[in-house]
Each structure stands twice: as C-alpha cells, then as structure tokens.
Image (cartoon, rainbow, N blue to C red; front, side, top):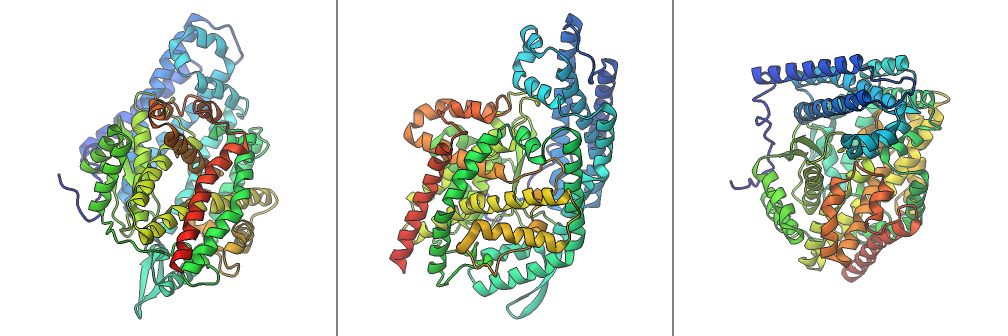
Length: 602
C-alpha cells in the first residue's frame, strides 16, 4: 500500500467497528465483569494491608493467582483505554467518546484502588521469602521491592478508598476541564488582512511561521485567548496542586517531588547531578539563542521567535517523504527498527492530520500485543519528521516490552523517552550528513530548538512547579501569581538569550503536564530522557555492534530495575554530573557548529 502525501488518520476498527457497535458494548461488558471478578478475588483473599505472618504455601499460591489475574485485567484496560483515548484526543467534542471514556474511568478507579491494595499486601509479606519460593515473584522482583516501599507511604485502607473514589471528581475532573477548555478554545486573529477565529491549536502552529509579523500576531492572539480562559484554568491548577500537596503529606512524603522521584525510579542525587549540569549549560544555550537572533537580523529573540525557521529546507517534507526517510534511516541502525516503522505506516497506526478539536500534542500509546497508536499534528518540515521519528521510537520501545507482563512494563517517565530520543537522533544525524550548509543550519536549529526546550524550558517548568507547590501550601494562587512565578522562572533560565519584556506568562495555562494529580513534575523526566538518550547514542557511535547487543534488552527491562542499575549496563553513572555533562557536550558541539554556520552566512 502506498503512503499518502497528506497526513493520515489512524485505523481503530481493528479493535472494534465503532464506539456504538455491539462488539464494543460486549467488549466493555466483559472488561467490567473481569474487573468485578478481580475485586472479588482480592476481597476473598484479603489482598490489603494486614499483620505480617509466616509465608505459607497457600500465600504463595494466592500471590501467583492474584498477580496473574491482575496482569490480565491490566492488559485489557490498556487496550480499551487506548481505544477510547484515540477518539477523545482526536475530537474532544465527540460526546459519545467522552461518555464512554467516563464509564471506562469508573472501572479504572477500581483498578487503581486494587493497585493500592496490592502494594499494601506485598508490604505485609516476607518479600525475600516469596522471591525464593515463587518463580513468578522472581520475575517481578523489582516490582515487589518497590511495592514494599510504596506500602510504607500509604494511608489507611479507608482513606485510600476515599481518595480513589474522589479522584474522578477532583484531580481527573480538573484535568478534563483543562483538556476540554484548551482543545475547544478559539481565538480571533488577523491573517492577510482578514479577521478570523481559529482553534488555539491552529494559532499555535504559527509560532513556526517564517513571517515574523505572523508569529507576533499569533503570539498576541494567544495571550489574549489564554487570558480569557485563565480563571477556570487557574482554578483547575489550584485544585490539582492542592490535592497533591494534601495526599503527599498524608502518605508521609516530605514533598510531592519526593513522591515523583520514587515513581520516576531515580533518587535526589541523580536529579541534582542532572540539574547541576543543566544549569552549567545555560550560557551555551544562550549563545545558541543569540546566534539565532543574528541570523534573523534581530538584536534579541522574543518568545515568538523561538520557533522561527532559519536556513533553507530544500527538501519538501510532505508525509510521503517523511515515511520514506524514516524507514530508510531506521534501517541504517537495524532492519528490525526499519520493519517496525514500515509496519506502523502500512497498518495505519498513525493519526497525523491537524484538525479542529484535536488535542495539541504528540504521544504514543500501547494498544495491544505489539501494536501502538501514534498521535502527532504533522507539519511539513523536518521538525515534523523528527517528531514523527520520536513517537515511533516510543512504539519501538513498546515492541521490546511485548514479552513482559503488564506489571513488568511499568516504565517510569525518566526511561520512557529512551528509544524516542535515540530514534530522533538517528534521523537528525542522517539528515545533517545529507544536507548542504543552508539545510544543515535548518536541521541543526530544529534539533537545538528541541534541546533548548528539554534543558532550558524544562528547567523553568521545574522551578515554576516547585514554587507553585510551595505557595499552594499557604493559599490559592490567582492568575497574576501564576504569571509572575512563570515569568520569574523563564528569566532565570533563558536569561539574556531572550527579550525579557516578551516572554510567555501563560505557558502554565497551555501545558497539559501541570494538570495531572498522578504526574506531578512531569518536566524533569523529559530532560532525563533527552540527555540519557544522547548519552546512549554516544555509546552507539563508539562501538555500534557491541551497543546493539544490549540495547533492545535494555528497552525490554525499563520496568525491571531503577535507572541507575540499568544505566550501569552501559558504564553510565547517572548520579554523577560527569555523565550529564558528556551528554550536553554533544549539544554544545552542535551549538558551536550552528554558530559557525551563522557566521558564514552573515
């Protein structure tokens, strides 16, 4: 089957014919029954916190039965949840999809609560004894040790039940409000002398327009739009951060950050080592921003210039070209990676067409077995190609996890970017090698733009969220306070690389990452992912064949050990700033090359 030149929509009919089909109704009914059966199994066997006791043969048998059934239902939930989210995120005004997703979330709350009970139960057992007596336990050793630690940070069963039951009307409800408002928000903007009202997701694409006046107009329209929506979005953010503060405190965490680090499978030493190296790199990123300003003929970049294209893209990156390039360049690494990408294109796993009602982000979700679904708003540029390669990398990661149980697949956010950054780097290096000087400028700038976002902007988001959590302990924040905190963080990180009078005070309203009660500090994992992925790519460049023998196994093991243990397989010490500096050195070399190209063209 030939690849369309225009961005495609994905095919979900391979799971069910449609949301209103008898097949879907039957599948959902089966899932709900399996959840109910699992609840009954947990109740019958008293799977919850209890007094420690000797590890009997009956307990070992119960562990094996409960864990097997729990894995099976989690797999069903993954397929059904991905199926429903594929409809909601491509059309947030699809009321049937919203209703079906709401029904699914009712069941998901039950599963979440069972997960809490499971961890509490594991914490009551002799884990070492269990590992010695049950092969299934040995296969899930890291999960069991982590569950034992989690058990020490659980509230009473009654409190955990109440927290889970309230989640849909609290954290998840606020998150849904943010998604609904931002995806349906329309703002007035003047284009070519004609005043139009466009979806915010479309207006934001003008941030990459070559015409500076168009970028400026879009930026100003965006600020007006966010200001109009800021009050309910501030309420949502206050609600979520207040809830997380309360729950974290009741669970005995020193802060939401400590809970986040536990979920991320890293420790404070790792985070500090990475942030130290990041802060040291800010002057280099400011060099990049000033060089870009010179190339654009500006004294200093404004916020709306961050996405401005530079150089020349002689290659026409329509979707067909993106397909051909990615499949071929992935093949330079391995046939298995290339075949995976070709299959994703061929079997319509990708929804790439920008359209009204579609959420403005990119992601990849596992669907079933070795299938994933990839969501992008494809733009015909090399940035669009690298984004697509990035998300396909997530799909390749899912492919390597296929032999693991659902509990073994629980990859933390820090390691979830490993394959995506690696795949993105493959296509970027390949494109640079085939480009002339002006095209190299364009490709380098796209890569540096992403790196700047992952290091500098992520640092600003981390500072902002840390300060919001602290201030939220005292009172609810108003819109002006959110704006002030964000501008303060942007000035600390971007420094003199940007015009301090033209920053973006409403990025807190736009970024969905802040609006989750389960994903606090959904920022530093992106930096970890970029720098860890670059560090692995450097190892690949040093010894390609040796690297390949362990890489796929690493991807299949991201839920089986903490980040430090997995990194040590490649001789990497993530608790030392030295490793993070070496990864940033790759970025620094690109900045040096970019500056040289700018001087040549000036």
